[in-house]
Length: 86
Image (cartoon, rainbow, N blue to C red; front, side):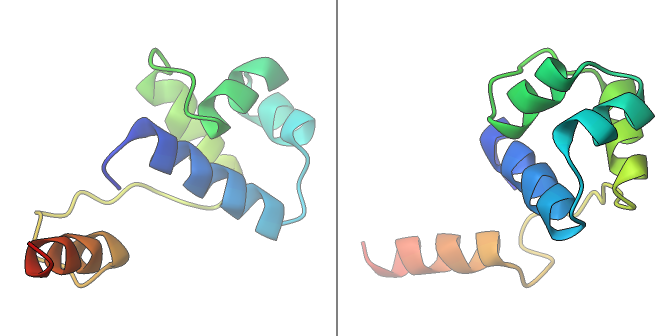
């Protein structure tokens, strides 16, 4: 992931796959539904680390710090394709 928008989309996708409502996740994480909605839409540049970790805990997910280029993932594939088309 490279942007807050992508992070928000990943959170929303995980929540929906689990069949959870924004209000339920927000309540369990101790944040407002509006705050979670802004995160999911990539509209919350000031979403704190504690809030993010609480949301991820509710969703059974975690952050992993990976050095760019060290993992075969969709972001890396996109970069490779973009470089190859130049």
